[in-house]
Image 1 (tube, one colour):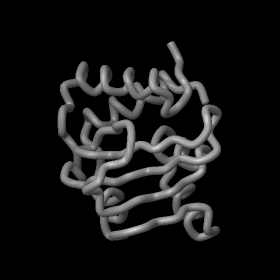
Image 2 (image 1 turned 180 degrees about the vertical axis):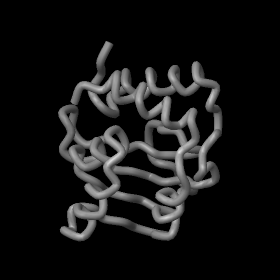
Image 3 (image 1 turned 180 degrees about the horizontal axis):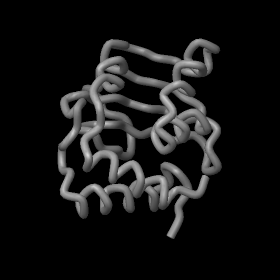
Length: 129
């Protein structure tokens, strides 16, 4: 089954996959909390967060960083693993960052584990748009 990226169904299935793979809080950036406002998606703008390497609905009051990003760029980064798309969008002014930018840089450092790579592949498989 395929779902629209960041829809409630997608987020639920992503959590199921994470649990099925036994990833829990496994992340090279496990202590990073990031609020993300994704604009222009098929279901409108969406407020989500990343905490302990996992997506969640809504913004966290204690997240030190907030990123506003267009839907297509968010999908390229989080689903396709295209970090270059993020850099290009940032340099073009399409990504806005508020707060501690070093947290974003920390997320980009470190290679993903085998479990995280499996998770990424599974997410690609369930994502339609």
